[in-house]
Figure 1: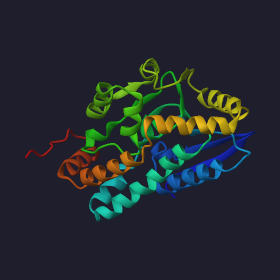
Figure 2: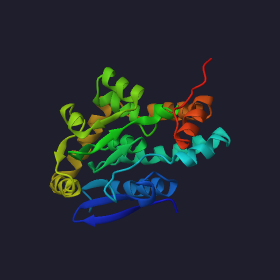
Figure 3: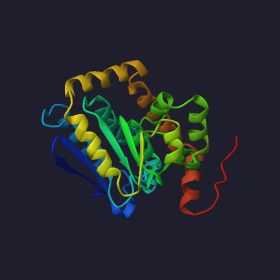
Amino acid sequence: MTGQVTVARQGRVLILTMDDAATKNALGPEMMGAARDALNAAATDPEIGAVVLTGANGTFCSGGNLGRLLGNAKADPSITRSNLDHFHGWVRAMRRCPKPVIAAVEGAAAGAGFSIALGCDLIVAAEDATFTLAYVKVGLNPDGGASAFLARAATPQLAAEIMFEGGRIGALRLAQLAIVNRIVTPGTTLTEAIAWAARLAEGPTVAIGRAKKLIEAGFGEPDDQLDREAAFFVEALHHPEAAEGITAFFEKRPPNYPRG
């Protein structure tokens, strides 16, 4: 078992909590499958009006497991693609679910954790929360729909800065850019997100579901971009740049990327 998603109900709100203390809630296959299945079930459950996604242990999600990726880089590329399709099944379920999905972000939302937060309909973040899309620092490209969701939410220049640099971005800056909806005191994001979700869940659920479909249609569904991300990620993981980037990360040294 490499972490879990715990599922709880509070009234008409479904609460999904990523939980793997040892890895700061790094994403694993069991976690991905459980989140996907819970969202698919919520989509057709009339007793659920909204969903909250959060992380346990004071952090949202540290992203993918680099150790597992290093192992996948030595395996057949089809295995990497299969794993990505498994992850992207969660993202697709989140976007297709007609109920509002709210991210409650404490601590860090890094890598695929940032992708998952961006894939939610709304984001509540602690004022000291940080967001990082650091794939490029190990020679990789984003997955989880990050490029699709940034293209919706940000200017091309901001998307380029986030994906080219891979630096840490504070919640306050993302709120100023209208990517984060609400900023709250650390330790209160889940309470705020549940309260917001409960208000939405008591509203006209079907009408909200239609509104979500209209937003998807207006911005363009992310399916094609998810497939592009998966193809590029496989290409990147099996390229010498990623081999050097990931190895350098574990050896705690600056990478020396191959040229030519």
